[in-house]
Image 1: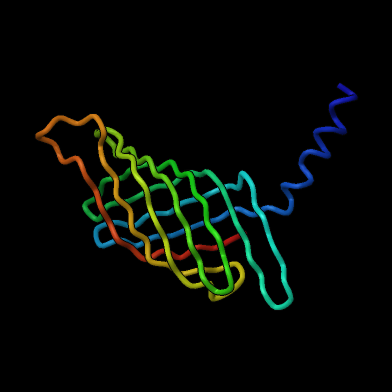
Image 2: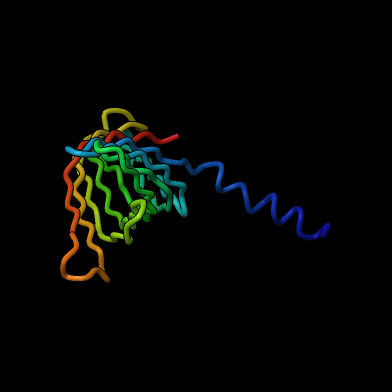
Length: 149
C-alpha cells in the first residue's frame, strides 16, 4: 500500500488543471441543468488568444413545464476558439414512467468571458425500441448558458 499511495497522489495532479462545466438550458417547453466533469481537457495559449478543448461526461435533469422530470446522461466535447463556443454531445434521457430517448446535440455560441458562454442548442432524441403508436422523437431548440469552474 505504501508504494501505491504516492502514485495515487501523483495521478491526481493533472485533474487540478481541469475544470467542470455547468450548463442551464431553456427550451420552449422545458428547463434543463447539466453538470459535466472532464475526461480530458487541452488548453492552448497563444499571445492574446486562448483555445480550449474539453471532453467530458455528466448528468443532468430536465423539468418540463407540465411538471414531469427526466434524468439525462451526457457525453460532451466542446471547444473554445477565439470567442466562438462549439459543442457536440450525445444525450440519453430517461423520463419518469417512460423508456429512454437517445440522440445527438449541437451547440454553437459566443464566449463572452473565458469561463462563460451563451449558445443556441439543438438536440434530436429518439426512442430506439418503441412501438409504432407511441411518440418516438423529441427535437428541441434552446438557449444555453455554460459556465466553467
